[in-house]
Length: 284
Image (cartoon, rainbow, N blue to C red; front, side):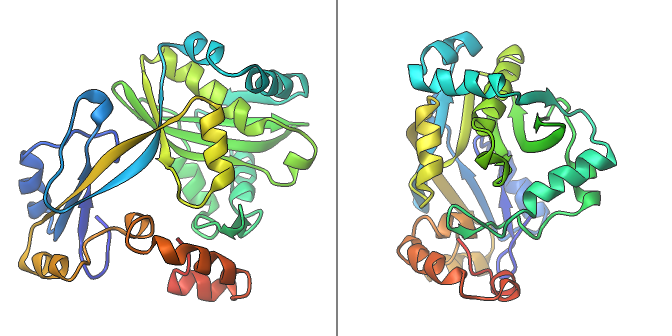
């Protein structure tokens, strides 16, 4: 449950199938509105009267070899180059305190990534890393090490045949010394997902102002696919807010109604104190 003015119940994007019984469950939790998206790649097409269409990145694959052989020659070279340079990728079952500190340093390395404020910059602590960084049936966590130190971290959430990238993070300073950290992390994740029988991997929205990340996705086999984000008002307050156009979670709002102001927000962020950015949520 999230939200301040409206309590929003939201199904796991791309992982959960909408069922009518979830409306009753959301009401019992005190939610004002229920948010979910359809999954057209699984034959699920749902578009309610209150909805938005967004393009997300989807990778479809029939095993690791299928994915790898369909990449371009240059991309395959970059993945192999990372291995030759000494990047080591391993699954992280449960982190030690030292490993947690190194992962935390990735989050806190710089407040800005790709020219905009990094929303996760101030949201992590050692205790949270230790608690949230575990590989199990639901999550796969991997780390990239170079010269004896963790320089990359990824986390993927899994359910059935579908997985979604939650985190893909590499050290900004390490990128100046070694190439292919992100490629190596993604390659390892796809290999593990293939062994688990996963056939679809989603990686966030496209055209959200992160040109470099969009290029990374496209060069590694992800394609754009349109999904419907649907909204079901559950209370009188939610129906009133919906009439006024206020019913979306912030991440969707900034890629639909407020998408035109995102460049402006990004341009002024570096001139605003970090505490003010964080307090007023001046980021998209």
